[in-house]
Image (cartoon, rainbow, N blue to C red; front, side, top):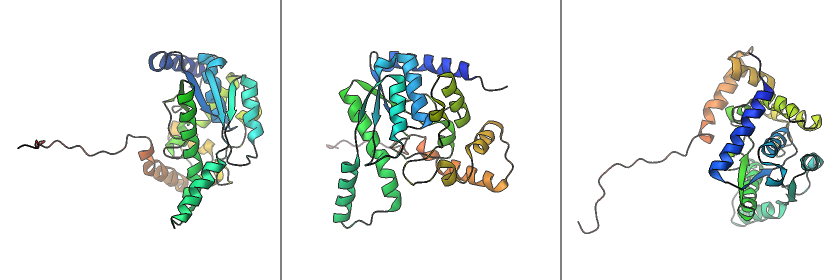
Length: 252
């Protein structure tokens, strides 16, 4: 059976509306707007569910952002309130303090710090605007751990985590988003590489494997399986010690 994007959009919109009724009546949806398809479609879904007056977009460049015009296009298309909060000063200050502490700052630290700062910013905006933060990850990204833990991997609710990249794009078309936002080549905005270049396989191959279990290249299958297993920790609650021993009182 083919994917019914109209049905998926309707069901997701109803779920978002119900989630807010139960977890934040009258609250706003706070969305980090990158200019990519996922944040665009997440914001559009929230507008359908809550109305554009209850959706707030936050644009968070780290200095200059080459594609920030795409983020601006999205907020203008949806007609939502939005803020531009540049995180460069915060990013530079943390890196400087790490270097002053004589910490050798790794490449991964530099890549993953911006999304963590952005998530902190979204929660700060949310607490100042009676908001709930939207997680914008999809199933394809989650499957291979293509997100930053405590960065773009989190939020107060996730409306798109059961949809693949191809399904999300189809939903974007139903929502009437500009095609340039839906079909834009996905990048992490951090490493200077496209998602697919960094992953080593296309989303088309990944989506097919997720939905059907079919894949042509054994090496690609092995890589996907390895990434999936290695990154499952990002999706589960943190490991915690279960102590079931006897508690001894201080006076005993």
